[in-house]
Image (cartoon, rainbow, N blue to C red; front, side):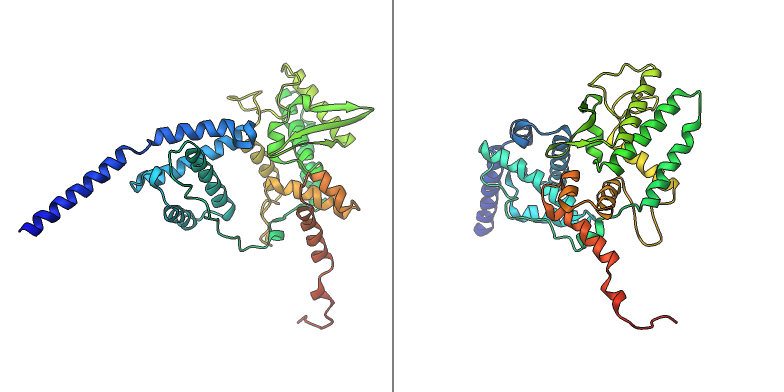
Amino acid sequence: MAIRRLDKINRFNKSARSLASVSTLPTVKAMWDCFEKYLNLTIANGHASNDTVKTYRNRVQQFLSWCRERELYPALITQKNIKEYRKYMVDGGKTSPTIRLSLLAIKHFYTACLAEKLVKENPVVGVKAPREKREVSSTINYLSLEELQQVFDSVALTLKIRGDKTKQVQVLRDRTLLGCMALQGCRSIEMYRANIGDISESYGQYYLKLDGKNSIRTVVLRPDLREEIARYRQARVKSGEKVNPASPLFISLSNRRYGQRLSRRGIGYIVDSYLSECGLKHSDLDRSLSPHSLRHTAGTLSLQNGSSLREVQDFLGHADPKTTAIYTHILKDRENNPASKIEIDFSQ
């Protein structure tokens, strides 16, 4: 009897100590406020893009929701818990890049809290995303010259429609967008951020400044693309829009958001629509094209037509030449397949 009473007292004391320790922990709100300050002052040296900040917030919120569902205190999370969350993402079908980004965001969250002494350690340190099992070159899908011409032609057909100013703006916008991505190698994020004032002229040459994820670069515009941009801008003016240097280069034409900056989702929708219309979005050879495939198209076709590796590296804004070399590797594999040099009659 005395032993049972003693065990009961010990359990009570242990529970009391646990509750006392929990009550002294920083609240989730305190940790979140600390993270918000960190996002504004530290990420990208205080100059993080809105997209980056939004992404980090979303990934950390997903993690905190996972903790709440399992009644885990964020301030007491261990490396084992982080590994459990990683397993949760893997089981949920998340890809390696997605998991890597989530772990990075959570790591920043705890780095911020550690700096303010809200936690004793960063539990994400040492936890890595699973390695991808696919070949890097398999992610490079692009359009052939004939397929790209087919896409441009599909847009040009609707340009003959007269009388509808909005339709004229739409067609010219779409042609300009596709041209920038497939001929100049621009990224979707760069198209999303581009403004009218980012186009400049010097000694008869026109340039487009691009604000990417981690850097700002400038590309020389093709003369025909520059003319198309001029026509697109003029069509917007004729439609009644007040265009100025701060105006977005690509605008939404929906009734609800007319004239506002075209969203990244909107850019993807436009590209996918034309690819699907031409029957190129998916193929019988398991090729699936995306808006980013237009950038791959620009790099691949440039190499095919005689540009050097260094020229294409600068053209696409690759920091590492190894990234550009992937395009060369693909072309060599497809044009000089060693298997085709084995002289044997394999036909039936």
